[in-house]
Picture 1 (cartoon, rainbow, N blue to C red):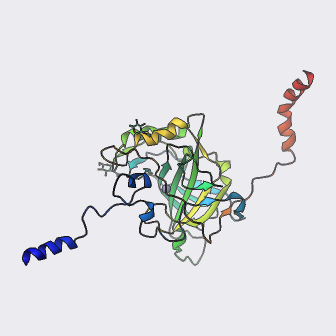
Picture 2: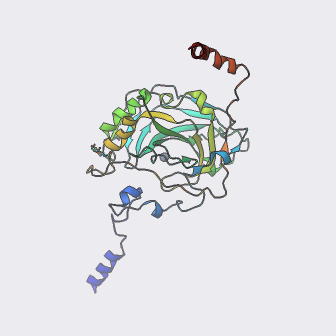
Picture 3: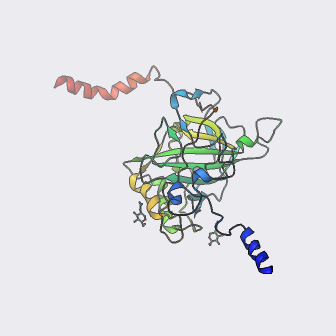
Length: 309
Ligand SMILES: *[C@@H]1O[C@H](CO)[C@@H](O)[C@H](O)[C@H]1NC(C)=O
Ligand SMILES: *[C@@H]1O[C@H](CO)[C@@H](O)[C@H](O)[C@H]1NC(C)=O
Ligand SMILES: [Zn+2]
């Protein structure tokens, strides 16, 4: 009888260790971890991310003005960590954002990326059905007491603001990304961390004047528990990295301690947009009346050369 009870007790224990951890599709193929269709928490709800953005259907919102970045230009020593799902940069100094139609001030807490070896499969969001080589997420947390709304109600829908940048392969090395790319070799396995060569957040971004054009919607974290508390900004202007810089992420990083599975395709599948509206910031400035001659003047010698030929 005692033995039977003991056996029952063992059987009733949650199968320790086998209580599988979440993972991406590519990992679920070769292990017992839980792939995206089995993610729990809030992951099966209906205001999830990422989504496909149909740019022509995005609704213009006049309140979506420019962003104001603070501390983004300050050199700092980032901690870089392989967290088993991505590579993450953690700031030592404060960096915050306001503007951009955000309801408060938000503080950067970490930055990470998603990628693939295929240059049209590595982003989480897509624009008109097109995926990009990578996607960078700068995750910010709402600062308490900075809401523009006087009667500040804790609105859980926008607790987190993620700035999402699509990345495409260009023909030149992006010097701003080199400190991170160089740090990858130091963190091949999960839980490893290192310190990056000093650099700024601004060095990672497209030119500031290009950051006026973006899409906005309310969604979720793209990893479990997929909390629906993210105010998303997806910038229209992609970041350009050299192809070798992009591939370095898949080559240097691994999902597992045995370094058997390269960390790649760490991308959540698209989620339904459902009833949500995607907004866009003010349309790009029209060609101003004086800009046409300004464009033509430098072309004149060419035109004349053609004419004289
Ligand atoms: C980095 O790793 C070391 C050694 O494993 C650990 O002691 C330290 O707490 C880690 N630092 C961070 C910021 O995770
Ligand atoms: C996987 O990692 C190895 C070792 O770094 C590398 O040689 C190989 O190119 C990587 N595979 C892919 C598909 O990136
Ligand atoms: Zn992310």
